[in-house]
Length: 386
Image (cartoon, rainbow, N blue to C red; front, side, top):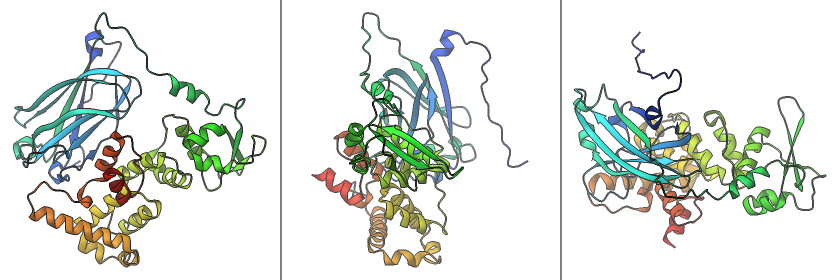
């Protein structure tokens, strides 16, 4: 029974009072917290959760995000809003020692007006304080997030969000106005599946798919080979501005392949989920690295190289290691990463090389400037500099 553990779970019965509905609490348990990468700018990816019918995600930077200027290791924490509609919330973060002493208590309020907007604490607490044995329960750090709706102030008129996205999504699979028809084969029963689309939408949001349809109308199906129909359906939904519904743990790689083949931005989301669920081992890390190189997935490539740096001798001795020696770009990047890591160990300055900046940070910086976030590390860095 050594593998069993107890976890307190709240079970709601009936309709809670209004005051209970306005407050929600979530506990996040970081097992093996001391082993998490504390390099500045490195983020721990947490699964999304739902609160007040909105989807959220916590972004934890054990060693602080890149905007923290102090040389002391500081832990950063941000609340990321994933849903479309605007919402205003109070949020607080609490952590206690094993003796029940409060070591973190911090609050904020913010109006999240768009998807992927984040707000939080650049300097939450010193990382060294969290690592103290008295503050970890058998190596586990527990953070409690408390959230409460901010009531709309009287006298402030309600302003709805722009409905364009909802109107666009109504065109998804709409046959009457469609002028394009895609056809896919289903491996499960050897039948075909057809999906209607609109040329104008494809030209604006998926040019490669639009080019496939040149000279065709909805009476002439355009064949889409080597893609599962459910995957292509979600790919089309993304093109129309919809939120993808997928079993990412199982199908993330299929989405990467399809999105890469037809140059759809969903590849970046699929790559992020693939990295989240990917279990690197000495035996498979070279295969994952070569796949990342073939599909131009810099986040996966970065994660694979990080694993290699932490398990260098074991990977070098593996049977598959010589496969990457034939790929000069990968070999060069590994050597640069090793040099950057060595410089980081010997240099206390805050100066960062291009290789030491996390892909997530590069993408976020480009996104904030309204620039394209797809491409290799070199392309992202060049785009940001220019």
